[in-house]
Amino acid sequence: MSTDDKNKNRATAAAILPLVGGPDNVTSIAHCMTRLRISLRDRSLVQDEALRALPAVLGVVEDLGAAPSGSWGNYQIVLGPGTVARVTPEFEALVEEGRSPARTPAPTPTPTPHTITAAQLQAQGAALKEAQKARNATPVKLLLRRIANIFVPLIPALIGCGIIAGLNGLLANLGWLPSVVPALAAIASGFMSLIAVFVGYNTAKEFGGTPILGGAVAAIIVFPGVAKIAAFGQELRPGQGGVLGALAAALLAVYVEKWCRRWVPEALDVLVTPTLTVLISGLVTLFGLMFLAGEASAAIGTFADALLSTGGAFAGLVLGGLFLPLVMLGLHQALIPIHTTLIEQSGYTVLLPILAMAGAGQVGAAIAVYYRLPRNRSLRTTIKSALPAGFLGVGEPLIYGVSLPLGRPFVTACIGGAAGGAFVGLCNQLGVAFGSTAIGPSGWALFPLLDGRSSAGVTIAIYAGGLAVAYLVGFAATYFFGFTTRMLTDLDTGPDPTPAPATDPPKEPALA
Image (cartoon, one colour):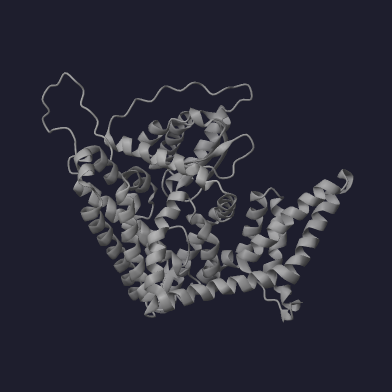
């Protein structure tokens, strides 16, 4: 990374930090594919509108989620793929440099009020998210988010290995560089062969255990020697149960470890606790969890294949139409274990290309909003800045800055996603099954990761056709049905090209 890039990323982090209350207000820092995720001591210190106004910030998302003791929920700042991975270390460094036990957060200046319609829509989107927080903080949803936190750190490796696997398949089919193909196969497959260990490590870390013990127990699943062991009348297979078995084994290890910490004398803790944790959890994993998780994994694969081969069009319509609400609620990451299980079994997940149609419907809807409101310069500027990320599958800026606060365009965007999903699902039903070799990317960024039973050209053509259908239907549904007459009257306003002098400030339009 060049010095200019590093300085740019540090400047972005430095601009964000005071707007979230300063170093002493930040209690934890993490990031996923597109978002900087922080937990805060005092939510009231955050300047939402000033954050959204930063050029590098694509949007903000509030999530109660799991937070450290004494912290407020989870505040997510959308920076986009690539950028977030570079800004996060700079942000961490600035927080560490500025944090002091005796220091209180310095008062930050009051942000300049924004009187543009786009800012009003963003504020309305944030208000809608705030109203949903109480409904989202259910035990089941919080558990799903914690499970998602286990898999999110694995996504970069899944993407890298998936792209290498696709490149390797292309070289093998073309007969090029035969001496390199085995090397690329090893590079692409190494991580997937040991993914259970990483899942176990992250599971123990997420649920309050010792991470290395979680990884040690999960490693049993991929150990070749398990083939000599029988459970439920069957010989075990290395890797049986996959990521689901690793998750269950590591979670069991966490509870065994916590039980040992309570009852084992402190003088013996360093010897007895890790031994009992690995022994008890390992035996239960070998003689129970591997078999059960293996059956569950097989059932997931069978169900996904049957769903798309017999009712692909309808299944695609439902999945593509409902995925945007899941993204809005932050629950889409709960599907990661299912995607990973499918990739383990067949080399790709058939669900991701269908779910990606939801983002395409969102893009089509945003373009329709752009053309339906020709005089609303502020909103059109917001859409133009967010569309490139939308084409690459990053939908949060368009969701929270455009369609969700407008209401009806969010529904019509879902209709576009449903249409695209139905198209891809129908092709699966007709025998052209394909999927993504990794998870994380969407939109155009998914093209390098596509794989399936048919040729690469057919697979790419079908996925591109699905995107086109979602774009067109999302655009048409929004253009013709996304606005009421009152909405158009209130929203399609803006300054005249040559405004006449006025003594009174212009009035802001009311939102429908």
